Length: 389
Ligand code: SAH
Image 1: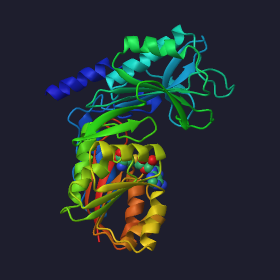
Image 2: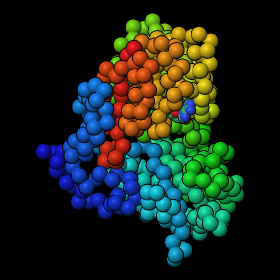
Image 3: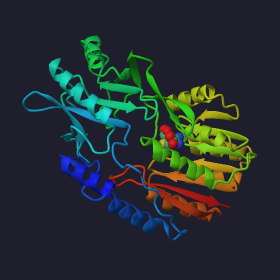
Image 4: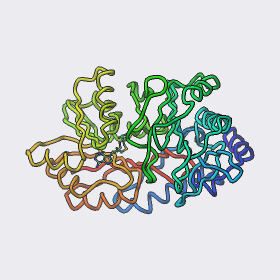
């Protein structure tokens, strides 16, 4: 009862642009209905392999996104607004608040928008290559409450930078670090490769399953703490480890799963392509005093090929690839190394189905499929699939 009333209240208060911005596209439905839809979608794609468990829902499905990103745009009246691209276009839809965003992050973005207008800054214009502000990203540590603000500019030039940040910190003293990211390219990538720390350490920390993690601006970090813990536990428990196994955690990001699984395994190797994430992972290993893990910066597929060619064997694999899924090269080499069990964490059930088909050819079969609702009210759904030889 409490929950339904809450839901009604939220819906009434919402002056939401979800139908335009493509964010929480399901927020005109009740949370229960969104879960049913996601269950049906995952079952439709995956129940031919094995029974699909009931989706693991969120306890409180609002304000869970602890990374919020906005793009700047100039209005015809010469004001700067912030918002997100309308799906599939480069048109910016103004967003003031979102039902699923961390409230602190939304507040900070609104302040930055107001300050930008006070300082008479202009948004970057992609066609004319003029203006200062491209994007802003705010990351809040769900447990640490440390806050990182990343301001993306097209060049290093940032007039009145010190004053701007000082004003921002006066209004939001909870901000722990501010980074200027320089992105001169004309691609849809938000962040460029070069950055300058304007204030604080240049990263934030957060805890997951009892481990503390350093998170830099360009490193991937799951946006929903409580469901991430559930997701990781579902994957790790599915492997039934005894403490004697050697494990590979492929697509490991900053090493969150690698460290979480380390106490149940003999040895864990984390593999990841993004150098900033691997540097975070190595630092995270040290700060948590974990001795039985190592990290490799490499393409996961190529790393697996070299391991398989060396004749290495492995007991279990955890894999958490991006939306495009894994590669046949990766799966071929995993099969050569012949782990008993694989925990495949997927953010895209369609590429998961494709990869399960290939694993099946290679002699593996799914024995447990569990959807987890990590992104309430969006169309996205995460799935853990346990495969066995
Ligand atoms: N397991 C981590 C990260 C998952 S996101 C976590 O839960 O936080 C997927 C990760 O795969 C990203 O960090 C991305 O940088 C990495 N990645 C993408 N393509 C890759 C590839 N070909 N080889 C290795 N890592 C890759």
